[in-house]
Image 1 (cartoon, rainbow, N blue to C red):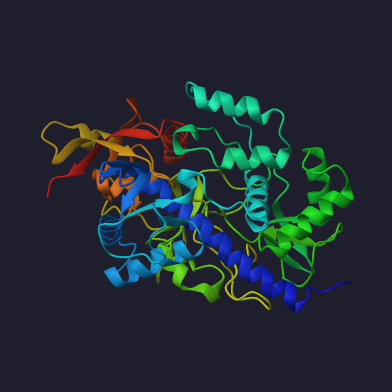
Image 2: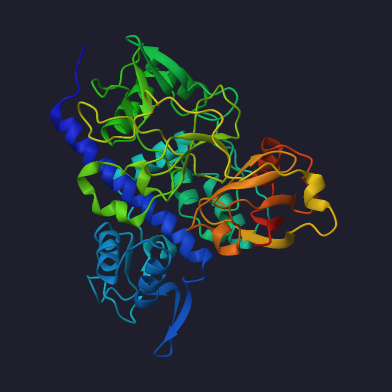
Length: 444
């Protein structure tokens, strides 16, 4: 059976890093739009749309703990410039400078180069989150015109145009079908006596691609999967084989939903960063058989715990030890054993009656949390009442005032004190992006 050649492995690792840079840059772009750092700016009687000031951005990166100092922040943004993700608005500077200069994401002005590698990346992402698109807002004139134009386009052209849509047109409902839906084909599988999470046989991928209209024949499906493997999007579970239409197991090498830290860009040889870099707590799906609201909460130098995660688009792949071919690659194999009933952060149990009793030492607060590109950034646990188990210090929840040990009273005007954490998680995750929560916290 054909082994994966060294040249293929090397190129896949290099392309995998480029894909990680693309994802990191896109997540940063969305966060900057949310933070209003990207906006139309006027300079010398000319308006430059959708741009940011370099000096302001560096301040923001340090304030949000994305960079420890200004020198590192400049290096990080230079990485994005080197990969054609951002550029000076007039292309007058090839280097990123800590000055009052205007820069812009190429995706915001339509100059992002759709190379062959980018097209393979887009295709891989579309397979990772195979989706039905349903417009949730009023369709504006420009979007309507683009949709009409897309009717006569090829499949790849439609994907590219959709990927290049501006931020205001991306309010879409995403329905994953390959990985996290009830009929997902990627699940716990076994090869050579070893069990792998979220794995699928090569022949099943081929069947799925044909069924979903992603490929017209088995030959086309195999060619597509081989391209994705060569570009570091998918991999054999033990990284020993190329793609075959047979009984070998494969996984996604890239987790498109994981929130990236910019400092990961400085680790070019690592393929992808360890989970400890992905904020103080990283969220990842345990396995398909468990409830959809059960995630792993990983903290540096602490044991892995299962909690309920109220966070969109932050399902992070498991990281096993380094493999034979890709050091620290995001393999979903051999997840470590986990503690299913982690220790509560509460100092003692608290009942609803105690919280609501007259004169109780608790203060009620109403907080508004606007989710960013990856979610809200907090974890709930318990029930009757639920409480906040963990908060991402760099996320929207922390900025809004959510703290550990607060009790959840209501979510989006719905009283939830009588519900368990799974139900509360579902209410929040299926609700609007702007979350209004009532919480109660102890008066110290």
